[in-house]
Image (cartoon, rainbow, N blue to C red; front, side):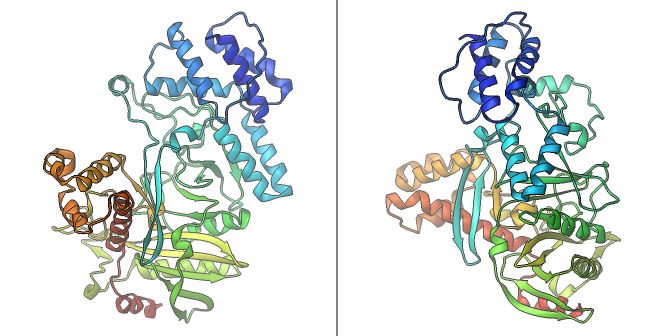
Length: 497
């Protein structure tokens, strides 16, 4: 392999994919030569077409760097750090990315996000080659289609990386994975590489600094994260609803939602105020309102209950201000609401339990908010949370139900890929079942196997049947997370509004 040829391939890729202009090519190549410790360079003709993504070229350069002592550690974490530095040699400065974004925004808002999303995956910040390994399918349920994904995109750390991470002194910079200081950060064995990361300042509220980025492991189209410039903890207040509505006004082709601000029902990062959105219509957004009600304080706000396994109130109005006031009112009432007959307790021993997961979108000329009622109470029988995946479903998922899953996209653990294959093998040949379910990783699935065996599927129906069953189980998990198990109890709360 010629390292000079691979450098030329990467430079050609960068120009053709508008990461850099032709004028900057020599400068960018020289930056990479310095990174690789090369003092000489021969420009070679590249006649082959550029790949769709740069990972193959980057892998060739990384292999050369390891073989020649430039890269000392060939583990996945060290390679990720180094290949983001390589790509950063062919990246525009943050100010240039923002300038181009808002130049396109003035012309067409969709063009602006198209540019930014394309830049994010063509630069390998979004590692699309890994994301495409995820298993994704649709399951038909009584609530409509639900999306199922098995997350295979995050590589497991190798033992060397884990050992090296233990020796690294923890740094307080950046303070967390969402801080704006991640832009351009080299990364360490304990903090992801972000040298090729670029963020966009977004106009939400005039007196606050907020930014937008894409998730490096996108779970759906244009999966973005909108985060506060200051490192401050999450909480759901009136300002939350104003920000969500402000962003959707700024970017009407995107939705934006927030995890609830309490543990168990909240997100994985509660230490930094942030929201998630994107250019995507989730199953919950497609669900219909099947019971309407009116609030005396907001008689012109359309309100109703959504036909969904979780407890969702949907409200519409033309005015951002009116809708923010209405959502804040519902949130305040819910925060203090107790209904012992429905096992809704606002507090136990002074600890709050009620919270809301809000999702905002602009549809049919009106602002729309879905307010998902949550409660994080635990019991002796359900120590992980009563409104949480129940133990009988932990063989499929036992993690918290966050914003993305609330909306109908299951993010299931990688272990299920092998479990599905083994389940299919057992259903096709019952003589193998005893050995398969004797293994520790499959024991948890035995009851599920007995249930599926009764379906008596034809051999060519088994894989689809297993996947459909997973979708049905996930809908039951969402029912577990729903605070109301019947409409009568739910409407009792709505009547208090």
